[in-house]
Image (tube, one colour):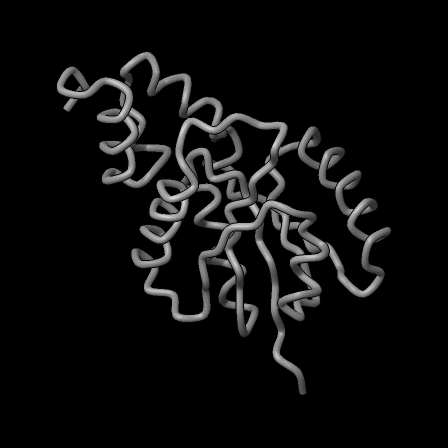
Length: 168
């Protein structure tokens, strides 16, 4: 039987507890999970690719996952999945708006590669309102964000934005 491989792309700008929870839960069902810091040339990022990868790795280390590999990719995710011999793409759903967007993405990916299935996982209710944009906004205002991201990541984000004036 072949290895079950899944790809979980996120913008990771920054990665949240919600992203990490979906990654961790999916990792228990697959032999290999590639957690991808996806780069969209039409999007601007608050964090460098290296920073995003480092933050993602913090969650993998926290959960002590041996079957998760952190990588980056800037092309179509379906082509990346083919390259890695993955059978599945993973998408997280928080609400109906996410559903509509993910449905459209899955149709596009299916048009690129008919052999790759998109699987959606619902976020846990207490993560359903967390978004990277909310975290960036709160961090810009120098507010506490450690309930949304790992505390060490919250400190990095606030220090990057506010230096010595970051809340403690």
